[in-house]
Length: 173
Image 1 (tube, one colour):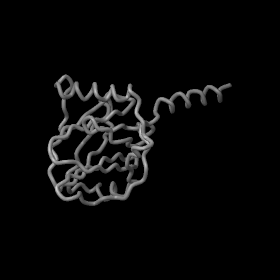
Image 2 (tube, rainbow, N blue to C red):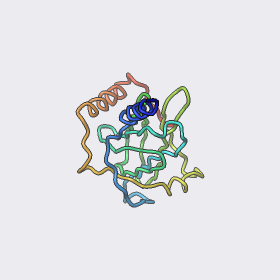
Image 3 (tube, rainbow, N blue to C red):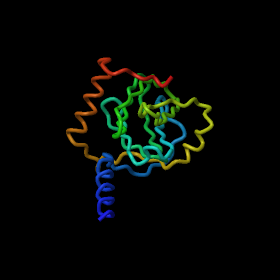
Image 4 (tube, rainbow, N blue to C red):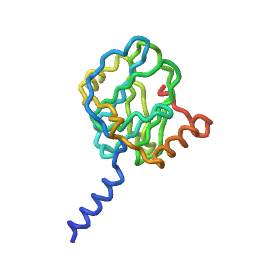
């Protein structure tokens, strides 16, 4: 009887933590293409919150699901970007950045006790970068990924709230 309750609770918890994206392996890219910016989203495994996927957006564009020990790389046009992160078990968070051409950025998902999840920008000389570069590199499989209308609406509502200054913007500084 106790085993059935434990299995039921485990199923309930894992169903609530499913990811939206179908991610596929990708090749590591060390430098951006000419006149682009390369953004690396990293999430080290820290045990606390590791079972919960983080859904990442670049403004209105869905980037994918970031899990512990993974790296998602995207090339972006230089300029203003508003990255959004839905940690599923905590409130959404955001990071506003001005990306420069031919630059590489590392954005780390941070679990902050009693606060939730925040995104932080690593300095170019951060000693953890070689370790992060060894993570499994993933990219979204756009053909297999389908978001529900509800998921898109939640993201767009949060995006609009941040753009209208209803929700504070974070700059990673």
